[in-house]
Image 1 (tube, rainbow, N blue to C red):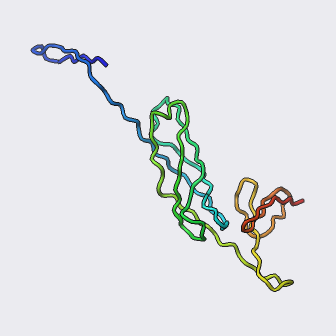
Image 2: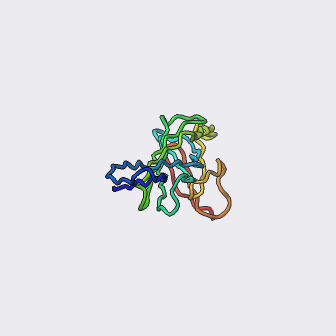
Image 3: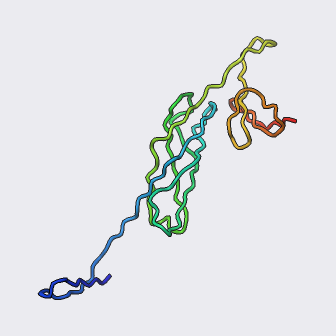
Length: 162
C-alpha cells in the first residue's frame, strides 16, 4: 500500500512511502446457544444444540453459522454437564472472522426409570416419548393423534397414535 502523510503544519513537508499492513481477522462471539436435555443413551456423548446469536459482524458482511452438535466428556447420567461446541462460521465473508466458542453451555442427561414388570418380576426401562422435532414429552405415552418417537436405552422407534 502507498500511504501519503500530510501534516497540518506548514513547516513540515508531505511525505509518501510504501508500508506493510497486517489486517487481523475480527473475533466474533455467539450467545444464547443451548443444549437440549435428554435421556441417557449408552455410549452417546453428543447433544443437540439450539439457538444462537452471532455478535460482532461488520454491517454488510455475509456471515452466519452452523451449530453442529455438542459433546460431553462421557455418556453418564448427570446434571449441569459441560458441553463443548464446534460451531462453524459460514457465508461469503466468514474467512474474515474467527469465532470464540461458547464455554457456558451445560446439559442434563436424565436417568431412565426402571420399573418392575408384574408378569416377569424383573425390571425394565420405562420408555420416554418425544415429538418428531425432539422435544421431550415425558414417560406417559401420548394420547393426541400424531407421530412420536419412543426411546429406551439403545432403542428408538417411531410410533403412531390414532
